[in-house]
Length: 334
Image (cartoon, rainbow, N blue to C red; front, side, top):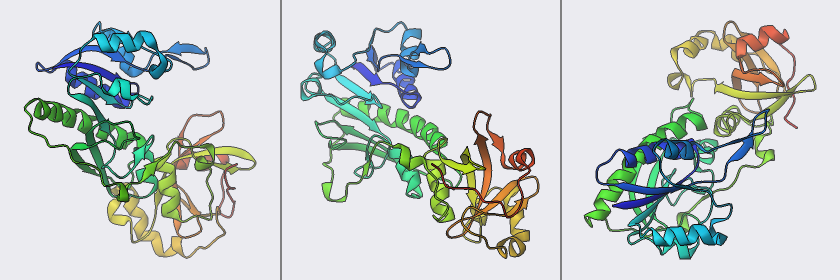
């Protein structure tokens, strides 16, 4: 099966690796987003997919706008590929492109469709506190993740998983599911299933206000926001920006889902929970662990933070470094 691979971030790398190492498939070329300037030197950095492609001496095409790039369109047409595989490419394909391969365009999407169509399914499923998610492979059409579904694979979400953890798990799951999907398509063992649009939900691009912490929200809502939009959620301390990068909601609803290193707090829970403060107030300092913050409903442990211009640090190092005291109040993000 001759394949052209479309993908850009690290999420797409395991799938491309699987295709390159499988005897049934020949990857003709790779399409990825243009190099971006990053870092202090403002250097052009290739995408993870491009780096892998070049290490295998594959042709790499990087159109700025693929739908308008006549050179790339001509190359795609001339390739006479059996299938285009699309994994987090980052651009919408035109109907002209979708019609080019013999079998069609197969997408690996990071949710159980039709839930969480769109650009950020992993982040938003965590934000909404989902207990499981997965991968769907589908035949692409001109809509936003609206194509007929091929195969699905599900995976549980742990309470402390963040978007990076979940993306790593799903990228491996997606790679395996894509191989199974292509082999079954080749043998005509899959019947595509239309999506039920009436139960579809959308995972839009994340915007700056989504990162701002509001301590009047509940502990579990804040925890889900912080892990979903990791590592960019922002509060404020003493007038300075403070990123909150890892938390844990505390209480009887959560002890069994927490690691033993945090379950020790259950012993002192009657004492800890007896202290009630205003939203954002430090109500307790768990020795060796971190500060415990009052929210609009429930208490939230800060496991890791990052002060402006500094490296991430544990909650307890943060307490010691700032000489944080019980009664001090963290402000909302701005």
